[in-house]
Amino acid sequence: MRPTEASPTLLAGGPTPLKDPISEPTLEAARHYRLTRVRDQLRRHGISAMLLYDPVNIRYATDASNMQVWTAHNPSRYALIFAEGPVILWEFHNCEHLCAHLETIDEVRGAINWGYFGAGPRVEEKARQWAAEIADLLRHHGSDRPRLAVDRLDPQGAAALSAESIDLLQGQPLMEQARAIKSAEELELIRWTIRVAERGIQRMHDELRPGLTENELWAWLHFENVRHGGEWLETRLLTSGPRTNPWMQECSDRVMQEDELIAFDTDLIGPYGYCADISRTWTVGHVPPSEAQRRLYLLAYEQLQHNMALLRPGLGFREFSEKSWPIPTEYHPNRYCCVAHGVGLADEYPAIAHPGPDWSSSGYDGVFEEHMTICVESYIGAPNGQEGVKLEEQVLITRNGCEPLSRYPLETDWLN
Image (cartoon, rainbow, N blue to C red; front, side):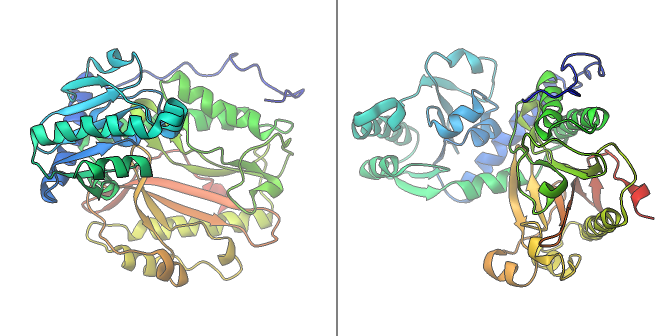
């Protein structure tokens, strides 16, 4: 962070931390539900077991968490979930104690790291050793020609398992389908994460002043998340002034000026690994917006409210896309990448494409179901325009429509 004259002292003042409301019975019920969802997918598809490398999928199935960001790009821990049999976790070196409290795991072993970082030129040897251990377990708990779903695997690993006469299948669709429907206990965890995110948003709101850099303002969201037991931020999407258009630029050392827009997207992985995905747009200094800024905000607000009003159980993804708010031609080229998407432990299935060419190239049908959690997206900014507005709400699909999970207010006084 580059200091400026207006920089606040990071630990001075501010609200006291929130009290964590989550009980151990809630966590136990969420773990049981999630593991059951994974096993139901395996049984439904006639698959013996699932091998997981994605740390978010391992967290979903077992609640085991260890260096989540580091292991996302260093494949050094993995889990095997049997449809009818044990859950086995291979942990990073000397980390077996980290999951001793988890009733979801039957056995913990030391992982064989056959990635190049860990194995160097011995990759093929280590991959064969790893595959032989997996194959022995599959045959012990299954059949001579087991069917194994895998969420993520490098070519050497796939070849080594195939050499062991294991039929490999794509596991990520099964995990996405399992994760899509939330239990009551999961919703408690999600609501708590959103409360933490909103504390961070409020802290940013309170600290926002001309002369701060984008990075300095963004640091407050990190601070409130981490001190409440949160884990990381998936992106760094906070921009100001001309950097708000086009969207998807990450925060920088740019010094923010009074009157200009500042927009952000939390993408926050909070307590217990759940995601709070909320976007808001303000003015620097919290001054009244200009007429041009007000118009951008009004359009983004209309898009958000129109699309939220459509959501209900049984609505098809295609129908939702076709009925979604028509983006004015002036702003269509800079549209957000999707109309809406699922969210849970991270962004997840489904991702709803815009109608027209976007649907033709990347849309897929499906149905919204009760207890899905969905993020509804809006970005309004014209090509070569001065600024843009980003808004996003995280909602729960209920029997009668959708319920906003995020309560942080929008700038409704800008709408008149």
